[in-house]
Image 1 (tube, helix red, strand yellow):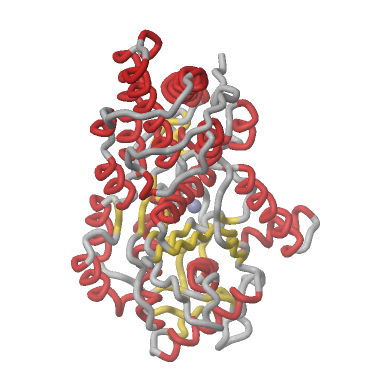
Image 2 (image 1 turned 60 degrees about the vertical axis):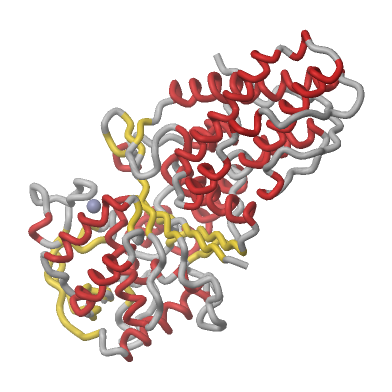
Length: 483
Ligand SMILES: [Zn+2]
């Protein structure tokens, strides 16, 4: 059985889940559900990144121990994903013992390979981003990523010999052109590497809230090195073989692409593991021209939106509004338009009309599969397999529109006998197949359609016109218009 291992970034504990987090975790969920629908042995991981200087500071401010602080924050994420119908197989927290053991073992493997040495780090550090920043990258003396103040560090550290992996990384990218997706992002990384890879400071002597460095108890492992190893520790390694490794897809935001496509593969090579198969880079939400972030105060609470719309409407919006990899706008107006025009009108109306007509029909639904030619199943599959969820949903929507048109054209309400049976047969079969293909995106809606048709939700191989015994029973409309 083919396997599929997909991950989200583990989210850093500095607040509540926001729209950007919900976006990433939903896209990963869509991919995981798609692979389960295909019958692949699927593992879907998300979790929380809980160490570092910033977390410790914040806990002190709140009058809590760092552990109490992260327990509270991490639980918010767990609850939010439950509400958004996220089907993760595991939820890893970097303060768990299983993770700590894995990090220590991983670091030992890097050390045994001669890739760790002692030195001094002198340079700039952005605490909110927990990143070391070379002087050349500062913008007006501030962090190039978030625009905030950076501080000068001069401290003892242990370095990872990242420079040793420069050629191996370049070779890996050229042998695996789909390693960084979308492909167009590869050149950005390659060019930066060609400028020369510097060794990475991988321990901090001044940070207590972290995993102890196994070769010097006065140091903790740099929070990014610690965090990346979650993708292995969640698989039960080093206690057992990580059977899902290498990961098929690490879904990440473009701001952390460097860590995932350069530092992480180099760390893996150093410790004797294969690099992941792909790093899928998504864009960010833009609100009035600015990236959504806590420090800018323009964060939208995804859970509030699901109270007004539905969980599935929000999930649909995430995939449908802009192509994966691009930045996109968020506004409630846009969400409302998708909900009303596409979900309530196109899809909701289709199901409602078909059920109204078939409920009244007596006898067996039989006919010629006329509508099947509008179903671009292979195109849909190919798009899903290359993680192009945006285009796949577009392809599926063409079929939904074609089905609506078919009903308008055949006018079943004017037909009788065999012709009526034929028109209804085609319409109902279309609805059944739509319920299957839409299930990765909108699992609750898929279940509802199945229930109204009186059939259990099918699998991918059931997506062809066939003979099914339906027991149609119309329920409430699938989506409500919001005015
Ligand atoms: Zn920063």
